[in-house]
Image (cartoon, rainbow, N blue to C red; front, side):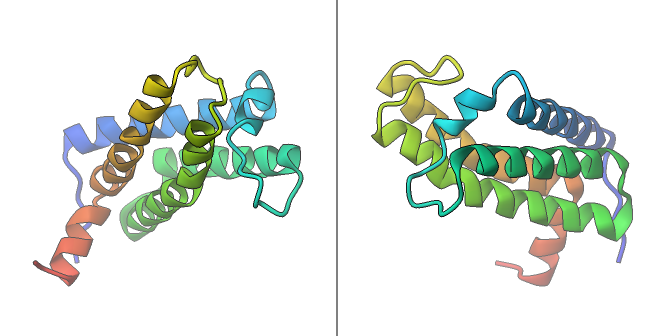
Length: 140
C-alpha cells in the first residue's frame, strides 16, 4: 500500500505539527494555567498533572507529524485524530462551565471553538494520508 501525500498535505501537516509543538510547549509553560480551565472535573488526575502530561503528548505528536514517514505517519494521523476526540470533553467543559481561557471569554466564542475540533480531526487524518487509508479499508 502506498503512503504518498501531496505537497498540500505535506504543508498542512507541517503547519499542524508546528501548532502541536507550540501548543504542547504552552501546556508546560506560558499557557499552563489557561489549559487547566479545560480539564473536566471527572478526570481523576490533578489538573496540573493532566495539563503537563497532555503537553508532553502534544509535543511528541507534533514532532511525529513533522518527522515520521510512510505507515508511521498514517498511524500518527490516526493517533492524533483520537487524541483530539479524547480532549474534546475539555472543550465542552470550558463551554458548559463558562470558563475564560485563550481569549474565549464569551459563550459564543467557546461554542464556536467546539465546531473547530472536528476540523482538527479531519486535518490530522487528511494531512497524514490516514483518511485515504481508512476510506480504502472501509469504503462507503
